[in-house]
Image (cartoon, rainbow, N blue to C red):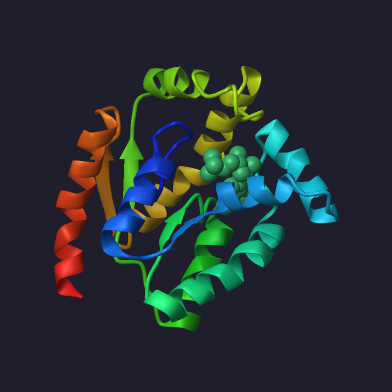
Length: 187
Ligand code: AMP
């Protein structure tokens, strides 16, 4: 899944995973969980998460690699939510795909205009310390600079399915399932 902050990739990722019986791998969830621990890695992650900065690629890969390999081995597939988020990560994801014999079937791009995203993120601050004020703006800028270019990368590979994510959560899920059911039937 490729989506700006606030587009609903966490919620939709869980629903996709449930419908097609594959693990939902959310790097954001993994990092928040680790950041809550009193460990050197937890402390390092807190610094990035609280500012809305990207976690460096090498640390991201160190933390996510084995999880993807295990998912591929156990179920033959996975939903990636929040990874890859930079071009070097996309290249690393392709390598992990080769290593595990899994290749991306589809890249879902959840598209929503900035005002919708900012409104949704504004309602989230109570339980996420990274979603307040300037941090929201910064996360959207970081997305535009580092992650949005992945759209061209995957479009060039013919993988992108664009979903209108400004709709209600259930309508977004319906649109996603309409697009993905065909792939599930093929496998
Ligand atoms: P998310 O829940 O996907 O919005 O991720 C929350 C935060 O975790 C982001 O703002 C980043 O600080 C960090 N993060 C999650 N995934 C990645 C990734 N693939 N690369 C770098 N940072 C990430």
